[in-house]
Amino acid sequence: MKKKILFVVTSHDKKGDTGEETGYYLGEVSHLWEVLHKAGYEIDFVSPKGGTPPVDGFDLKDPVNKEFWESKDKAKIDQSLQPSQVNPNDYSTIFYAGGHGAMWDFADNTELSKIASKIYENGGIVAAVCHGPAGLVNIKLNNGKYLVDGKKINAFTNEEEAEVKLTNVVPFLLEDKLKERGAKFEKSGLWENHVVTDQRVITGQNPQSAKSVGEAILKELNK
Image (tube, rainbow, N blue to C red; front, side):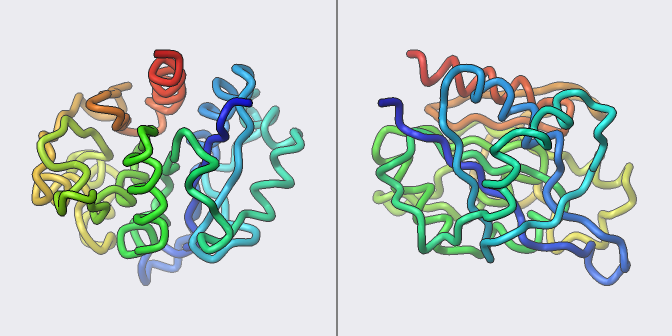
């Protein structure tokens, strides 16, 4: 039996006080799901509050989004687990999906950070894409160091946040926070596919990087 993969999605549905809705970004779930599901991995979903998480980037013209939305895993994401229901020992990998909502409820969720730390200390993989690395900023390992400290890390960049005009809306800038935690931050130009793997931590820059993150996870799992 292959160990399962845990996808983390946000429960947060508003961009600050702008009145704009947000949630998990559908393509950042579906494009990884397609890669890992076809490789025979079972995927579970967890969100800070459990239950049905809000969705953003809802585009069923994207055939991969449509395939996911019509799959049996759609029911699983709509009944996402609460962190207290997760046994870290069941999982080879934890993946944090992006979407702006992640900026509000990932970083300070200590339960999720402990789950990720345990999976990593068990020899597993921690992965994230776009705003998903917000979930990585406060993960600490048994040695007391931050998970990202000294590792090459990638995420939604300051330039991309400025481009979508949310620099002053998000609670912190992800690139800056990861650097504060000791990450060796890498990046490409706006909306370019950029994925980095360093010591079982896999991170991607933006929605364009989602499928490549899935492929990098698969490569690491097959080692």
